[in-house]
Length: 228
Image 1 (cartoon, rainbow, N blue to C red):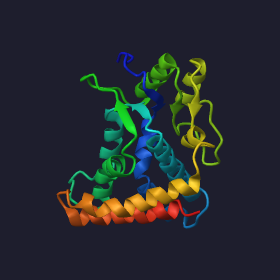
Image 2: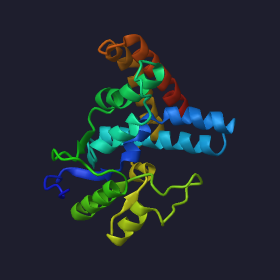
Image 3: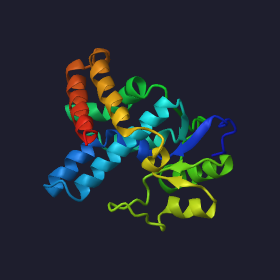
Image 4: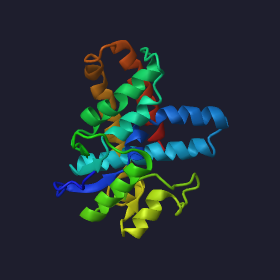
């Protein structure tokens, strides 16, 4: 893929793992079930979701634009949906979470995507492309790749290594917004907006009952994550 020539208004490149984190309340449930406690994996997943939500609130408030892959996030989420694709609360939260949050809660954030009409790379090739874009435009790359559960960075991971080689500034979501936004104020607006916009949104869905169940569950977990 060629480096895009129209990214003058883009503030950062965003890795697919950050965008997909918006549905990670599913992972939060799984982590809790595995650990049976609020330690380890559960705490890690909770912090990731919290930091990601505040990142998107920061992007929304400042009307910032990011650049990401088009196909890779869809491919990641598709792997989580059962083959029979039956309507269930599980499949609904995977389907509606990102559109609901992007269109209703963080609507002043603009997410540009790679879209040249050609099949797009995924995995390592996608990572390499995003690093090249960030290097060309001299903008930071926001990612969770290489971040261990204890918060330390693994410099051997591909994005971390290639970014260093290409003088790209790699940032976690929390590093991108740290010191620039009031956490409590941001959390309050997010939770209030979730409550206000839920009812109107679910009425536009094919199965309003399941969409409402999915968003209600998502809202409860987001409120919990942002509560302390």
